[in-house]
Amino acid sequence: MDNEYAPRPLAGWFMPAAIASLLFMGLGCISYLMHVLADPAAMPLDQRAAFEAEPIWVTGAYAVAVWVGLAGTILLVMKKKLSVPALLVSLVAVLIWLAGLILVTPLRENMSANDLLVAIVVTALTWTVFWFARHSGQRGWLS
Image (cartoon, rainbow, N blue to C red; front, side):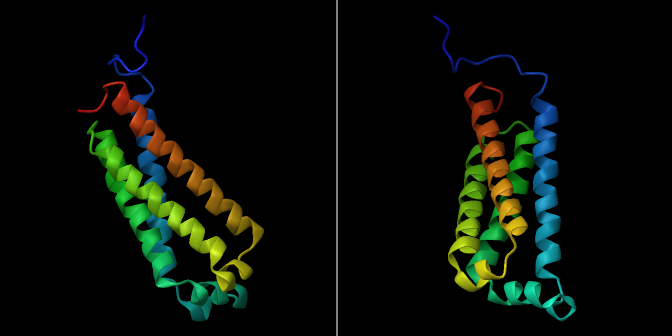
């Protein structure tokens, strides 16, 4: 009987998927920097209201999600097992960030439906990157 999690040869799609994951997290870091370095005075009123309504813990969760996620995907590209717990931390931080966007009433009221959709897609992609790292570890592709 074939063991589902027996070590297997490295799949040809591993490195392109790992690099795509790295690029996704890199874009998250750029987005984070644009967010924290933005000048509220230059924003439209609705965006400024959302920016000012964001609690520090939501911004902190965003920071942890992207920077730990970037480190995790660098480890994934390097085929290191430590990528799995790092990407789990990133996933948990993304879930905290998403919860903040939904649960903080002034923030939620100043977000558009597109903003919420983007947050949900980012959460789904972060889960996918974590799943990919975990799957890679189970296949014996990480050392």
